[in-house]
Structure formats: C-alpha cells, structure tokens
Length: 197
Image (cartoon, rainbow, N blue to C red; front, side, top):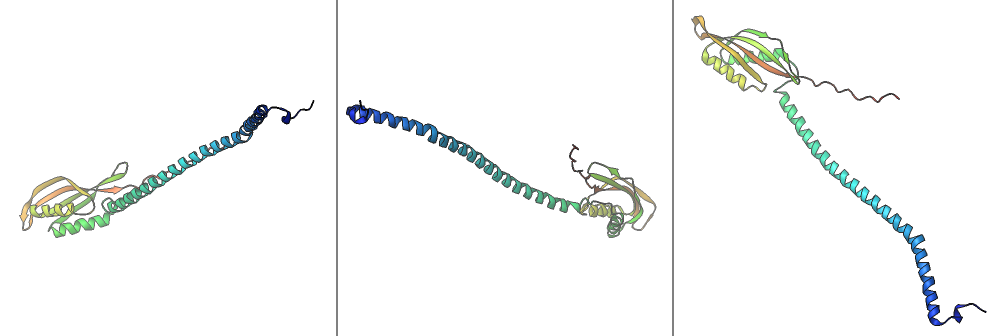
C-alpha cells in the first residue's frame, strides 16, 4: 500500500495542506515572531525610558539656565549692595567722610569714639559715639547728608544741649551714636570626606 497525497481525495489534500500550513505558521509565530515581538517590546520600553530621561535632562537644562540667571542677578545685587554694607571696617575712610559731612554742615566734631562691635549671624553693627558743636540747623544738614550717603549709617541716641556760653555759630552741643554695618565673611563650608573603608 502506497502512501501519498496523490491517493487522497482533493478535500483531504486541501485539509492536509491547511494543517501543515497552520502548523508551520504556529511554529513560525512561536519560534521567530514571538521573540522578535518581545525584543521589540523591550526596545520600546528602553526607548520610552530614554525619551523620558531626555525630557528630564532638557527640563533640568532649562531650570539650570534659569538658576544661572538668578545667581548672576543675585551676584550683581550683592556687588551693588557691598558698597552699602562693606565687608570690612574702614575706620579712617568713615572718619574722613563724617568729617567732610560735618565741615560741609558747619559743624565741629569734638569726639569720635568707636564702640565695641555687636556681631550677628551675617553682619556686625559698629557703633561710633560722636560729639558735635554747631547750630541746630547745621545739625539737621549733617543728618541729612548722612541719610544720603551710600553706606548705611543709622543715627540714634541723639542728645542736644545748649552750649554754655553761646558763641557765634556754636549754639548747641550734640551727642549721638552713628551705627554702621559690616558684612561678615560667610564661614567656609568644609567638603564632606568619604568614610574610610
């Protein structure tokens, strides 16, 4: 008895062909297409992760640029404010400036006594006790000139007394405390050291 597809009726031949084709299709899907789809899905997940990383990096770059602009702005403001709040005590320069203001206001500085500095977290207050002779109007002009000075100088504890005996353009003696401020250097941040292994 001979076995062959030629001996089978046509519908059995078509059925056998369909069964073989279906078997080959299933084998092709399981052993070739399936791994390819899994690899493609893994690559798609990796691509999505890379796109998300890229998007985050772009967002970080935008934020970094904004922070850099803000840092530059703050550095510019710090430089501008350093004239108002200098980083060191400049006794001679401040004394000359106050002396100039007094001369321009027709006042005489009788005493210039720096007091002990009061240290705070970021700045120090530096009070200076002044004794001035002149007129009340001249004292007002002196305070006005101090208020327009670029460096911060607060005047407090003002005591005004009539001068005895009264002289020409010397009717009062005034005592006050002129307080200026000094910016302290920030403490150096020590780099973290790696623990010994």
